[in-house]
Length: 252
Image 1 (cartoon, one colour):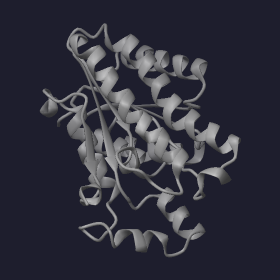
Image 2: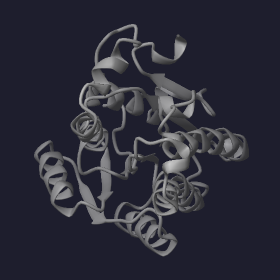
Image 3: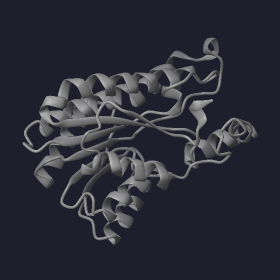
Image 4: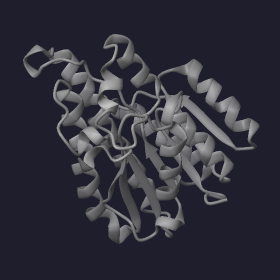
């Protein structure tokens, strides 16, 4: 029970890695606050978490809207008394296209959700976490695309590089407040986002996996376990770290 009596916030919890992390946190004894723009998927996550015996708070949330994020984090504290940990996971994919083919609307959406959303969530999380007295932990969703270049996906890669930089900078700012801030950097994981990519570009995922030493997709549970570790006291001397979970993808 690594997160016994911890209050954990998880954005983007309606499916994929977010849902897997919510359920893993529930199994580890946490009270969880989950959010997403997908209300139906979010309801399914809540049902599964409550079946595991977890206390759950949920609401839809647009992480790119400052007022919504501020109100949501305040509601979590009102419900659970504090925020002990957060997984800022909400994100959207980018179009597979060369840079000059990208539309400004697509660029803005990817940046607003994947980068601005992480910043806003952290901003309103640390405002509450600083008063905990015994610290807290934040994990941000970056990507292997935040560690190396991803040709034909420049908006997504730029946003995820930004998340890594934001994580490292914030880790230095809040270490004295006993708030640890790390990021996870998954490679190709068996998620709805990757499934959509395979539908729009058949064969692309398979071809990409030929360059991954482990030659397979990761599972959402494998990423969730890494997030739980970073949220838990077992990673108590880790901050500012961008953890690769990619089957060896970025070592080549």
